[in-house]
Image 1 (cartoon, helix red, strand yellow):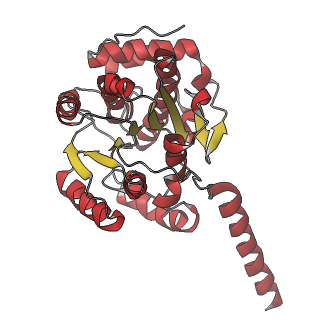
Image 2 (cartoon, helix red, strand yellow; image 1 turned 120 degrees about the vertical axis):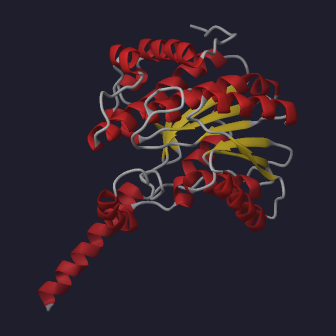
Image 3 (cartoon, helix red, strand yellow; image 1 turned 90 degrees about the vertical axis):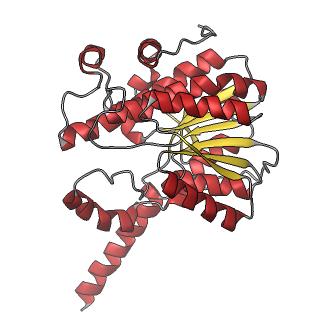
Length: 325
């Protein structure tokens, strides 16, 4: 019995060490109120995005939920309004897998909303398939859709400066790579649709998020708009809903034990969106509510510049302002 108790105590101690030392995240400490501010959050009908939108609504912001699934988005609007007591929470349809949909969203937003103070590029997916424009799904949704959306809304962000662009990346950007020759020939950063290739495609898209933010900071220098990218922590969300049922079954016990809930996973997003005094870190990568080192490829300015140029061509959007470098 004593051996069993020692083993059990050791297991509990190990769990506490792993959870609090590796997986648990710091909290956003900003107490800023957001009445009169307008914020767009993509992919905010569930997961981290919904938790982020709820916190922002509680602070008094007008929060636009930019989502693909109208039924789930309307349900999220109802939930957030009820819990926050803020009626200024609205849904506007947008499918990041369609350039036409992104452009339609931006056009409607610019016609109907006089302000944009924070743009949070939160939506992300992992799984097979192609976008409506023929790109690999992870690359098209996680990077190209947000690249186009951000550029279409930049002028409004500049008009409302100081303002921010916050893009949710991942620690997995360290495993990402960009093969431009493959991208040109297949419109994707992987060559197939296997489970491993879908995972690699996700890692590659997260590297794109980091490089996009780095280059965006150069384009925004002197405008009053700052930008940040981040790792939200290891979070139990619906990100992997497109993987097979048996893989999800294997992940659930681990996720329940170790992964953050969506409130915990929203904290670094909120820090990057709200914290005073971080403007000088524009273009940098955050984790656990603090600036962190990015991977070597994430610091490659020539790679970031080339990705920007390729993304402009793929999306058909040409920046009006040249980068300050």
